[in-house]
Each structure stands twice: as C-alpha cells, then as structure tokens.
Image 1 (tube, rainbow, N blue to C red):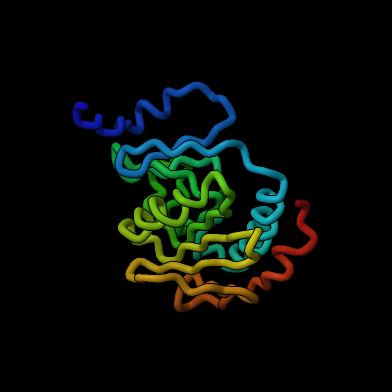
Image 2: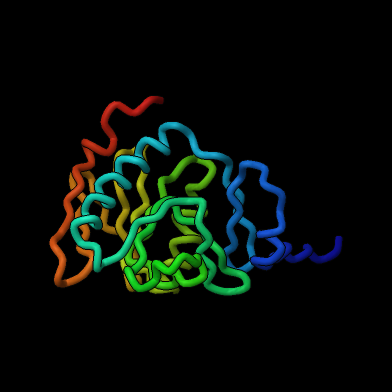
Length: 185
C-alpha cells in the first residue's frame, strides 16, 4: 500500500469562491473547517452574549466594536476564520473586514460538529495570532473555557465571566446563569 496522501490545503481565494450553501467555511493553516448552520440553542447563547457586550461597548465606544459571523477575519493566505462573536479595536472598524487583524476578544459557542476545531485548531491559531481573550462557550456543560495567548490550559468559568477591554475601561460581568437560562434542547 502506498503512502497516504497529504490532506488537501486550500487558500482564502478558493474558499471565498465556494457557493453559498449555508455552511460556514474557515481555514486554519490551509485546512478546511466546515460547520453547518447553527442551532437555535447556539444562536440564543450568542445573542445573549452579543447583547451584553454590545451594551458594554456602547458605553466604551473608544474601545471597539463587537461583530458576529459571518465575517471574514483573514490573517494570511491560509488562515481565515469567522468567530461566532468577536471584538476589534475601534481603529480597525473601517468598513473593510481585512482591517480586522487584532481581536480583543473571540468567542466560539461549541456544538458537537465544531468542538474539536474550536478547542484545538482555532484555539491554537487564536493564541498564535495574539487574540487577547478567547472564550469557548459550551451550552451543554454550561461552562466557558477562557484562554489567553500564553496559556497552556484554560480557566474554567462556571458562574461568572468578566472581561475588560483595556486597562482604562470598566470590567463587564456576565453571569452564566443568564446566558444559559431556559435553553431549548
């Protein structure tokens, strides 16, 4: 039997040319990650987080702005992600996704189809790219894994997550009981 073929590697240009079929396509080192449309449960958690962070950032407009997928964060020809929710510095809110290079916060809400990519592949990429804070939100376990660029292991948050956009800004507190309340199965 011959040697196994190396996995196909893609470029951003190739992925952006894919037809719109409802899936989310991302690249980590040229490896294609495909995620189906999110569930209602996923979107409820995401909308609650976005509402809280959006209100916080409205009170601190000089800090930045929160966005949610689909959005094109392109770091290289082979690194292209669409975080579920992310915050970029105010000076990178230019109207062009290519200017969003320095994420202050990235959030992925995991599902069975995305857990490995979110916890391993994308986490490593986010750490390499210096994403200041990365939250992996797990609605099933009702926990948040908090990562920073130099972390070897996450901080597991079970009750409260906090985030400070800058040393000058106030801290936002998000109670996980509110985020995970009354989710449909």
